[in-house]
Every structure is written in C-alpha cells, then in structure tokens.
Length: 196
Image: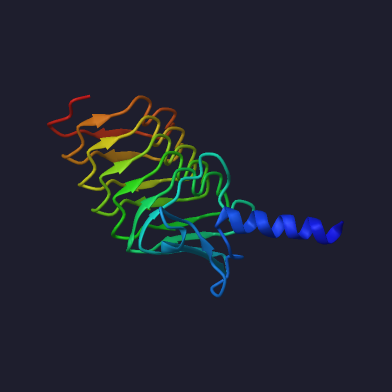
C-alpha cells in the first residue's frame, strides 16, 4: 500500500509539471505556456526567478515556494510577466528586485509582502494588476514606471507607510481604491492627461 501511495504522489508531481525542489540543480519550472522557460530557485534566502518569457498565474493553487522562507525576491531581466499571486503573503521578503524586461505584473502578485520597504518599477512595466502591491504595510518608497498606462484597482491599497506618490505622465487611469487606506500618504502628484 505504501508503494502504491508513493507512485500516486510521484505521478501527481509529474502531472503538475512544476518539477524540482527549488535548488539550482533541480529548479521549480514555472513558465507559461512552457513551464521549462522560467525557473525558480531558492538559495540562502534569495528566491530567484530566471529564464525567458512569462511566469504562470497561481489563481487556483499556490506557487511551490509558498511555505518556504525567503527574504529577497530577484526577477531576471528576461522575465516579461510576473504571474498573478506569485508572491502573495510573502511576509518574510524585505527586498524585491524587478528585472528590466518586465512588461506586466499580475493581480495580487506581491499582495501581503508586508515587510518590503521599496519597489522600483522598471521603465518596461506598462501594466500592473488589481491589488498587485496591496497590503505591503512597510512600503515607503514607490517609483512608478514612466511606461505605466494605468494604476489598477486597489494596486497599492493598505500600503500604510507610503508618504508620496508621483504618478507618471503616461498614466491615463487610476483604478478604484488604488491608494486607499494608505494612512501615511501626504501627497499624490498627478499629471495632465489623466482620464479617470
């Protein structure tokens, strides 16, 4: 019976396609549409996402690093999309480095990364999803990409430590509640061209 259970578990892991244990020699495969295009490695508290193209979304399940401890998140320069819910609840993370190739960040991608202090969106980022940085309580410094065209609903809601936001000229839409419950927020600089 124990052998049968082991076979079933192994078969389930093979079907999920994530593979790996998160080490350099055996990374998690998290790309979309081909999982092998993007690899995740956890080493000495640093969660590194490398490869080419888009990460998968985690709308119906948790990423393989969900119950691990990491203090840094590093996204490689050839990653173009950070999947929805990729780092949701990553409360141990204090540092996030986003690669220069990221074009889009999915819904809730960093929601609940409550100890992250600073986020700089690279110039390549055009869109961020709903609640993508919500509940990042310690976030004090926020640098939005000049390529950004909209700030999604609740994108930075409940970021209690943000003091100032400079909205780039290219932003046409600021979504509902984008900066709600940002208790320390003293100034939002808006530009001409804002439609909503």
